[in-house]
Length: 584
Image 1 (cartoon, rainbow, N blue to C red):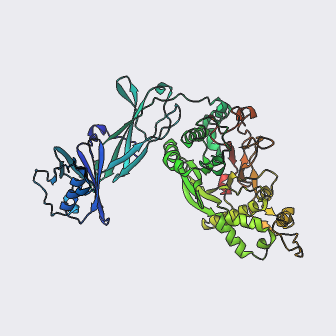
Image 2: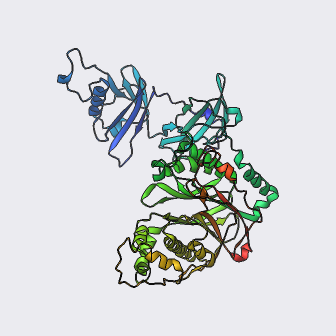
Image 3: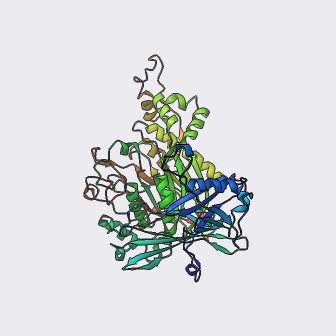
């Protein structure tokens, strides 16, 4: 997209008058040529071989426009006749193009397609908007993001207007637009212009398309539940205080179309609250308000990320790094970081399924024999991933710091499985550090651990070790023994293997009673989301982010709701650097 308008840009833009333009796509190396034009309100499309003569192409077009299509004359009713349609292609001076000419040579810019009395000027491989669409309710305070498909364009310029009586008032030239209270009840219009750069460096400006929304802007929902958190953000942004710490956020966004949703587990939600078209707006608005330097997201809906969240966050000042979960195109992880403060040094997506296979193969004499068949099968099937992202501060000589974002396997019986997965992530982290020429780099490790605070995975992160004598080895080995019909004569191994990570983390402070909300649980939820930070490089800011009161979380029966876009709540930590220059 492009937003910096040159003087007089919009005066140079021609409107799309589909009654007069035939858009032609003819690319070297592709078999067919495509020509599209609108006749009497209906889009017509030709898709023919580039080497076919014009005679065959125009004959097909005449037959289609006459209404006979593929029907034979013998199939027509007695009172039907095949309508004759005059179709030909001419040069700019009006002379007809020979029908022995190939399509590749005939359909060029400046030539004219004549259909009876209608004339269409051909524009070949010019920048064009194929589709512009807005798939969301337009709500005050939430960014409106158009979905645009373009061809032969490097970028797209946008212009937003608000309806003012019989006229339109221009209000923005950004890709997305955030309606204010002044827009409530009024319709919006967005205009889009495709642009490409020629070999001589000049702008090739395509034709403008406009979309006028049918409904007016809706009033914002009551979001006063966030007021304490936004007050905290405002207070910590005063007098350059933000330069002294790193704000990290972790948030499970509840992916769209999960098995739980299909099973009706969220039927308590009020109408529309579970729709991704609404939740993506509410969630993205919330992300921006926290003003975090680094944002770690789990259960990201890929389509919502690509078509809404990423462009809106990019315009707001964040760069996104995306990672799909293996074998699951509907659920992903993502990391955002402030574009003005950091550069991406490296990124790596860790396939925990493959890491488990490698660990199992390398240590089959120990790990594979120490866990239950059921857990081994769960690990084999796990599609979990982790992101390792290294960032460097802009305009600074500091070495990179690392961010790990993950969503561990969720089976309640997989306590040891989560230990194994974290050990695998730490192994890849250590390799990434070594590849960067670092040994002890500052690191933040965050995500949805699917593990309560007393689970052994937290011992591994907090101490850097997990003992071979920990009782979970024996418990996990024997947990499914009866169900798996193990050989009763087989001696149970009571000791496992030592697991070392070499990096010791502190866990972020929080007084939250729950970060995941499930009204079916005894306490209405559980604490399963965490932010860890390397002990040698960070310390906690004294103040922590305000937590939500239970009365807020359950005011609308439970969450998600019109005020909360997920069944998790965001966790945020402000981390103070400890001797940054020495630590790096």
